[in-house]
Length: 304
Image (cartoon, rainbow, N blue to C red):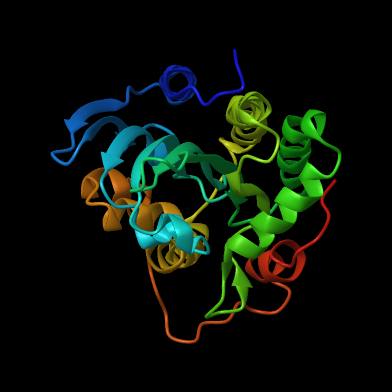
């Protein structure tokens, strides 16, 4: 592979990753995902793969999209005014999984590739990768969180010793609900606008993150899938899911990009949990299992 951007190679990897993850999750759940292939009138296509009402997953989606446009949306050109008005090509795999059992955390993973083509044909296109994964427990478990973060570290460490602390910090800052001064979950990895090591290395890092997802997440839900729970735990899960909705609709760059670029709404919003609750000024009882999430897990810390 040369060090020139190769969109075909990226697309081939992403479609293979989607298929690999869906096969593994179907084997775990025992129910098949629904496959929904779609075309974008403005240019591009995608394959949405969704499970609802599964034996384990209450809702989840593993989406692939490859879209084109004549004008890069503001969410993708934020902080890079020289790219405003550029044409674009964007592709990625994005997943969110919402287990039914409150002792099993929600998880998100995304890997993506962008090419921005300035209107001035004499200016070289600009490309970059982005992605990461993060964990959102309702009832935290130290073993689970350490495993997840160790898997994230192992995925990026071969590409530079400084990348893991940098991407972990980026994740902690990104998945933060500013209006509540509260973390969405326990973090993981996040990176964007990444092209500083050349195409081959940047693509290799992105592949490593995508390939690490199943290793990071499956052992957690395998350990927790049969943990007994009741109405109290389900009620707290629905309340905390509200934070997930707030973040995705207010702050998430991927959601905003999809909506601003005229993407397929059903696919974009597949990340929303199926049942959610909000309460006015609710606070957990001090010392309760619900309070432990706030005191021991949501504050930023070094898990590995």
